[in-house]
Each structure stands twice: as C-alpha cells, then as structure tokens.
Length: 467
Image 1 (cartoon, helix red, strand yellow):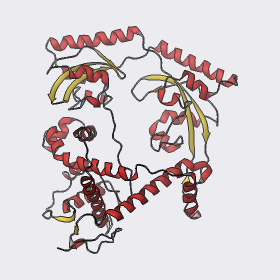
Image 2 (cartoon, rainbow, N blue to C red):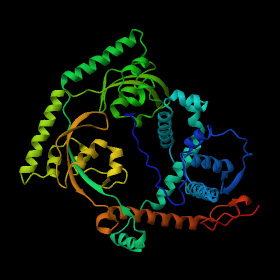
Image 3 (tube, one colour):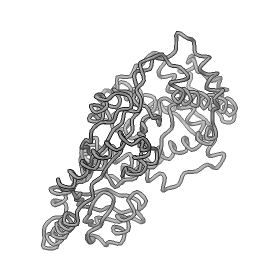
Image 4 (tube, one colour):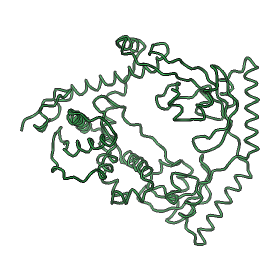
C-alpha cells in the first residue's frame, strides 16, 4: 500500500534474542498446525512479575518447524532462556518507568496487520481465518506488541550509544583465525542518474476528469468499492475495494490525511494530489482519532514523446560526461538527476539490506533484475546507455547507470571490507554490552524455572529461586 509510512525499525538479531518472532504470525500459523491433543498449559518460568508459558515455547517450536529451522534437543532450553531475557528487559523497563505510547502500539499493530492481510490475500480472508473482527484481533495482540516495543526500547537504552573506532575494527579483524575468515563474493558499486519525465497538463487534466466522473457515478448510485476494485492503481488496496483499514493520521501522507480526516461517513473528497498520484477518497468509519477510508488512486503516465525526450536528454548527458573532463558522473548526478535519494550522494546507490554502497550480484538480482543485467555488460568505470525502468512507486523513467567498481571474490580483508567489518564489530560490541547488562541485572528480579528445565545448559548463571 503506497500510503502507509513505515517508521518502526526492529531489533537487530542478538545471540540471546534470536527467537523474538512476530507474535501475530506465530498464533496465526499455529491455528493450522495439526489438531492433536496437547497438554494443559502451565507456567514454566517466572521473571519478576512476568511469566513464560509452556505454550509460548511450543508455539515457537511449531513456527520453527514450519520454517524448516533446525530443532535440536536443546532448542526448548534456548527458547526458554531467550524468553527469560525478554522478560528481564520488560521487568527492568517497568522498574525504570520506560513506556511506549498508544500511538506507537497502534502503528505497530496496523503495520503487522497490513503485512498479514497481504499474506492471506484480503482483510476478509484474515477475519474469516482468525474468526474475529480486525479490532478484536488487534485487541488480542495489543499486550504482546506493547511488550515487544518495551523490549526494543529498553534494549536501545542499553546499546544506543555504542560506537566503534578504527582501532577496534582492526583488533576484531586480527582476532579472527585466518582459517575462519569469511569468503566475500564479488560486489558492485553502482551510481545512477535518473531523468523523470514531467507529466503533461493534458494527462493530469484527463486523470482529474476521470476521478470526478467516478464521483458522479457514486452519487448516482454506483458502489465506490466496486469502482476502486476495477480502476484503482493502488495494488495494496484495490483488491480490498479501495479500503485502507483503520489508520492514524500520521500513517498517511499529509495531503491525503488533510482531505480524509475532514470527511463525514460515506462522504467523498474532491480530487486529491499526492506524491503517488491523484485520489478520490470516501470515508468508511471513524473511531476516535483513527479513520478507515476507501480510495481510488490513478497514477498519471508520461507520454511516449516525453519518455523519448528523457532518453535523448540522458544520451546527450552521457556524451558530455565522457568528453568533458570537468564533468564527472558524480557531478552530473548532483546537477541533473531527479532522484533525490541518490542525487546528493553523487548518484551512488545504497544497499538497503546492509546500508553499504556494495551489492552482491545475487542479491542485486533479487532486488532489481534489470539493473543486474545492465551492470553485467559494463566494465569498471563505464556508463551504460539510457535505459527505461520503473521507479518504486510505479512510474516510468530513464536512467544512466555507472559501474563505479566491482570487487573480485576474496577472503575478507580490512582494505576491501572495512564497512562490513565495522558493522560486525559494532554488533559484537552491542552483544557484549547487552550480555553485561543481563549479568548486572539478572539478580534484580525474582527468577523461578520449572524443574523439567533444571538440566538446561543456560548461558547465564541465573539465581533461581526454589518453591
């Protein structure tokens, strides 16, 4: 759904927090697992005022089994200890008056629900599958989501100031046995100059006229949802008859939110322009500050003539870069590219998976196959011809791509892999700080573990009470 604004970043995987699954997903998945008789649920651990249930462990075992993850004889012990760590964070957060707002909880619930709706196909399918309304599902998981956010926030207070120096990176690298150094596949460093053709006034006028016609048709008795299903170009909501589900104002782009929040039930907006295109909005329901609206999105398309002009422009720019010594690709990107994410970086693209400027070819193929095909034809420093591509929000544009550099497959070293080693060093330092925090706080809460787990090889020396 193009209107949603993703704001929450989830906890980095830590050695002792490796099984913090999406709680909603765990419950949904376990409903379709075999219906064999199960033992009565019971408490298997207590940390302060927080408990770990037998069912908590088994749900994650089921999730791991479905995901083809290895389950060993120690897995239940590892899961239990992970959950005890989580409860210790929650216990400390409450003691330190760390809180999360209702707004944060609502945003996270909405994000997770949108994800699972996309997985099952529609909101109706999710409701049918779970046997409850969307609001009831959200209420069921509100406490669990609040706990996850508390853990995340408490962890951030512990590691938020962690930084690493070049000396620490070198020391970490030196500590890795030579025969254990990782093998790094070939990676590409890429830059781009994008030319987004302007939308003609005629195209914008035609789009607005079409939406106004939709509005008249609804006023004359046609169903808004049917029109949204047939004509909306928002793939995330069209199959839901244009419906977005309950959302807060700050989850919507400003222009859309301004138009939507002022509507009465069943009222339609005038044509609304946002960065995604043009919208017709209808109010479905309102609950406090949260609204549910339908919308029809139409995305203006550039004309073939304007696309051709963009290609000609970039072909000419490529010639200038290759013939004028003072005009580098990076300078041309800064001056002429219409892509704001890369323009200020001299056109250099950033890998969203790790935040570096390097792309493994296999990963790049999964992200953007056409880009992979382009750079595979280029030599180091070479610029490709202007090629048509589709932007993340569905628009067509042309771009020039430069292969800045390509690394050879190699054993990890400081010169070529410093950024990767720096990130690994930082994660290692964060782990150490978290482990130290746990060691210092493990005795701050009452701890009890069910005797059936007495032989578990726990990593932490818990001071376990006997009862």
